[in-house]
Length: 228
Image 1 (cartoon, helix red, strand yellow):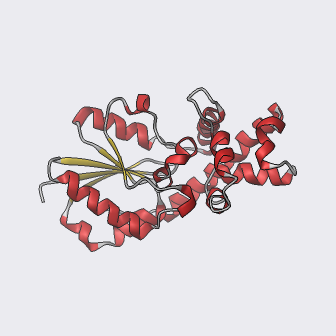
Image 2 (cartoon, one colour):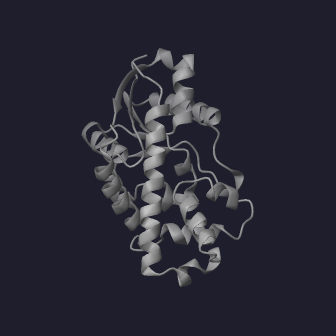
Image 3 (tube, one colour):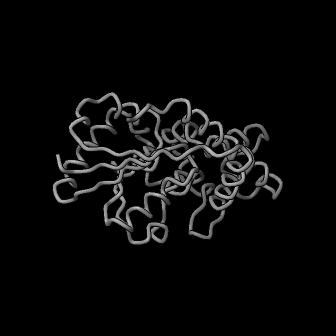
């Protein structure tokens, strides 16, 4: 096939989206997001969905739009949806950028022989040293707690928490998991967090979530498949 697929992958909070946007600006190619959590439109802040301003007028394609209450998108299903997106957009695009860091989805891609018929190139972003990573992660988390963009990660949690079907999904996603665990340790009712959290609590949460991201990033480094 003449279609070229360029994959940008790496651990969470290493700049994959910014790198994909920069390449999309230079080439005009659309970006297909491999992040399964970003399929949950209700978790835009906590999943790191880029804003329209961050996209810089580039095109970003999500595998699907999925309510939190129905659960996370399984990796095999995500792989099938990626095939559909590549076939649809590849009919008119010479280059597609695929970007993300889902271990299970990348493993599904690596194990699927159907992908061998495409021309690939790969760009893996490295995990920086611990202190550099934590500084970057803490800055990201502070932005997520800010309501400057209209909604914060805490706002997203409080909107979804009353739904019993959404709770186990939230408890399995980085960031929301840390907030829920912190509230339980402090015996703070989830729905009262916006009123009860102090400045010290927010600082503690920033550190907790940054460390959670680091642990996830280290797991990704160990679990990524080897691409040629």
